Image 1 (tube, one colour):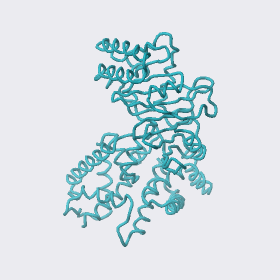
Image 2 (cartoon, rainbow over the protein chains, first blue to last red):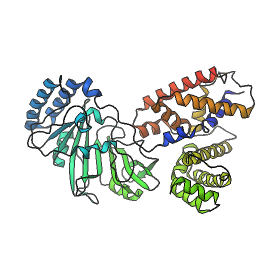
Image 3 (cartoon, chains in turn cyan, purple):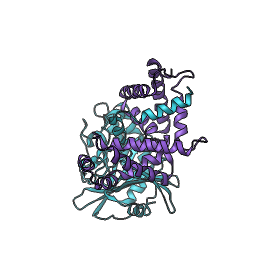
Image 4 (tube, chains in turn red, cyan):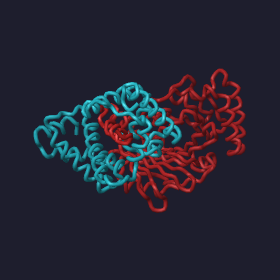
Length: 274
Length: 188
């Protein structure tokens, strides 16, 4: 029997495998979190040093002060390698051990308003309406810097970020920069409702990949063409879309919403980002 | 609407069952068909054929996993349509690529001697056994590639993996499948 005939038969037979494997490949739930301590444990000192170097480049006097704190954190990393404190009262620095309930406690810098750790836990959310799915595959290996203004975020992430000042239902914004050990910055604007719950997140980064943090959380993956942008990937379910991600001009972008949006509504939001 | 309620409507011969099925799973089924056919028009026809097929087999069949049940029907109908469309010449899209890749699992002189029906049953058993042994990520990658017809790029985007990781995973999975098929006396 011809090899191609047998290969075709094999392809057909794959269509008859146990239903559980089909459902698993279609599953909409986010995968289990991986251990949060991996890189921070392995590279605790390195992460602190890289973070300090990156910040030195991008934030002037405030960062110089931060560097001193980061160095202190590096020195302390033999015993607890996850906690980095910032000296500038406008910058709050968290490690994900703390955010995700790891062994080290979060220590926002003195004088700064503490961010509700649960609001950051949205990274593990599933794809149901009501959750904001902004999990990132590598989120646990980065440091999170929270700012009070878009200007500060742009300066930290070293990019210009155009995004709407508000979205439907938002009352305020939080500006976050995820700094990875390789120096990558992912800038994120989180739109919060009047109760402080995130309802939308818009990201931008100088990388070429899906930075939405979502990929396997949705049953529907569509790709559409948007004027002036090109291809936009839309993720959602049969009711509509909750995630859009695309690349343009060397940058990657993503929009993630709690509300399930129509294609037109999602693309309208996308068109305001640059 | 719960799947079991929809299935009950099929058993009651209530045509609203098809409407409910389309509302709940229509886009998913179209996306499966499109992965194989790369044609919106053909995908919609396969979707509609899926409803007809479902209507004809329920009852007596009562699926335990309705979503997977529909996915299988759509996939098979899409492959049938693909074969019809490309009977005379090698077609475009992912199907010929998938077949080329699966040929790696098969030796040059490897036909099973059993009859077709027995062979298909055995293949299903072997594939289930093979999938059970794969790590979850590798299994999901394998299924997205060879069940849903996703390209390497689409899989990488879907799961947030690098393309090289996806390719490597698929290559290792095919190697494992080849060893198992050979051990079981198929195509090895």
